[in-house]
Image 1 (tube, rainbow, N blue to C red):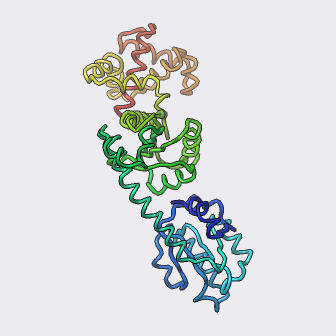
Image 2 (image 1 turned 30 degrees about the vertical axis):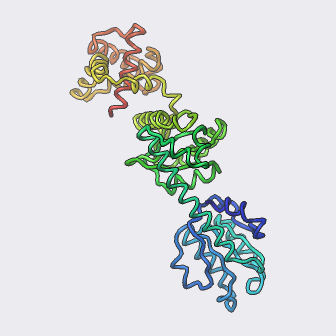
Image 3 (image 1 turned 180 degrees about the vertical axis):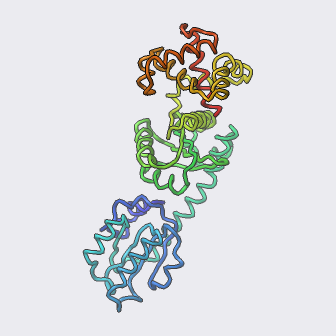
Length: 369
């Protein structure tokens, strides 16, 4: 549960009011702690939600400032102040501090029973945990083993909608689960994170095409400075689609890593989809041998860069001028290099079939690096 979900659920019933730190409301809550003695904050776990009446600290004018600073250091998901007997006002500088540090600060009236808030939160917490465990089992089997326990789904009413839900899957490398969770919380979409070896999978369910695009845009913005790679599958309909959509996400991730891009979408892989769809290794070996191997071997032996020039020559539709401009090399030098490449490959590189074959070979070469 995120703090925003907690707030939306309980704000009317328990008269919760958010007064600062609105930008931090997407943080996950990992427990609620009644904290009256600042000496006990060392027992607070990361992303804990603090509730206090100020009972043990009313004699100290600076205790609230110390509490909020300590809550920030401990990565608390937020602080709830019970206003009344011991806390009568919140100094404006502390409100500004919470806004600046994106630390959600909430208040409740004195006559609200704190124990009720805590009990209701933990009731939901354990329900979510239990659901997460069997959702995870169902989704994991569907995604990785292509098996679905239809009898289990039939026996659990809350699972039935997921049989025909719309799913979006994204496969990640080199991203921490906490980082991914923080970003996905901001989408406010329903999601589940699964792990297979070193790959994280985010499954967004009951999602529309536009919302999936918005979630992808948020991922692009939030992870643009991270050394992360991820592949995005096309949307799938029904839990039976998860296996094939996971394969799409894996292939898109593979291309992203091979081409050193942050992300790739499966429906934009172009020729890479053809290479990834060929299961016969002999066909791939023959493609590489006929199209690139001689140039790669020549470069390795003579420390030349003919492979790079050939790639641009094919990419720029045989335009020597564009290759020269792109590589900051004199046109005559490029002409000489192309002549050498033609001799090495024993081809004049003029036919469409030959250029297409070399493009495919480059896709294969990228994936094998």
